[in-house]
Every structure is written in C-alpha cells, then in structure tokens.
Length: 196
Image (cartoon, rainbow, N blue to C red; front, side, top):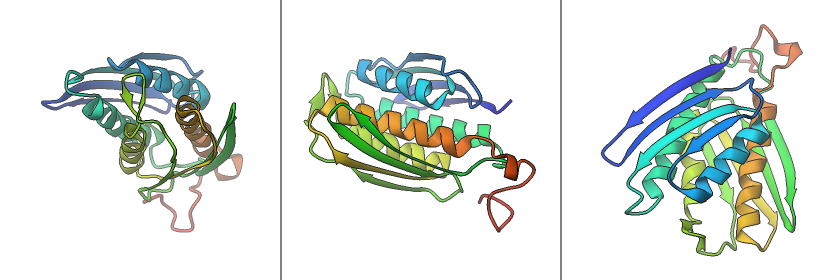
C-alpha cells in the first residue's frame, strides 16, 4: 500500500491529508474554498489517487495560506507514500486540452525540487479565488514532493479552463510518473541507485 497521512497545524491553518497512490480517484475534500475543493477533487480523479483533505484556514483573510499549506502537506504526503521510489516510472508528461485551453505538464519524481510555471493571461479571480494562488499551490507542491514540475499554457482564454487544465494535467503526469514500471520493479530509475 503506497499511502500516507500528514497533519500540519500552524497559527494560520489546521490540515489533515490522507492519500493512497494506488487508488480509484475517490476524494473527500473540504478546504473552505470552493474553487480549490473543485480543483483537488478533479486532481484526485485524474491522478487516480484516493485523497482526503480537511483544512480549517484563515480564509477570512484570503485563501493564500490555505492553498499554500495544503500543497505543502500534499507534497509531503506524495513523497512519503512513494517511499524510496523503487519501481516507479519516475517521469510523466501530457498535453491536455480543456475546451480552448491547452496545457503541457511534465514531471520528474526524481528528487529535484523545481517548478517552471508558464501560465499567463489569467483574470485576477475565479469566483473568490485569487488566480495567482495557482502558482503558489504548484510551487509548494513541487518543493515539498521534491519533484520537478513544468506547467506551460500552450493556448487558452478562459481562466477557469486554464487552471482546471493545469490541475488535470499535473495529475495525469503524476499518475504516469508514479505508476509501477515492470522493468524497474525491484530497482530505481536512476544510475545513482537512489532518488535523492
């Protein structure tokens, strides 16, 4: 069972996350932020992770701490659940369409923390959600999962569609990267012999 539970409590947020990598895409999400709930629900569905996220955050201020801290905990949960990475494909990529939006996502789950986020042309908000928090979320996710993540918008005008494409594409790329490769079943996909 590749699974993990992470709790994180600060003066700004109180978070509990449970993840099972080899799941069916079931989710129970309650962040207090409607748009983020929607994004995490579809993230779990497209990654095929079973995911529970509970967060009580200072959303009376804004959603910044909630989005960033959830991504921190989710990244740590992913890294913990993946263990030493034995048997994983390691790399994943997709070009994903969402109506007029087209998003490229590429992942290396090889323990190099890096984010390239080329997602521009967004409206300031989707509902009450500040769209700049998309980049904050993915940066915290990449840094705490200790992975390389590239997200590049190839086209798109509708902000909701663009951000939804980013979450779906990153989920699909992660699903590929964390899937088990029979060729590496008892090995690690690195000439170093470890992913670190």
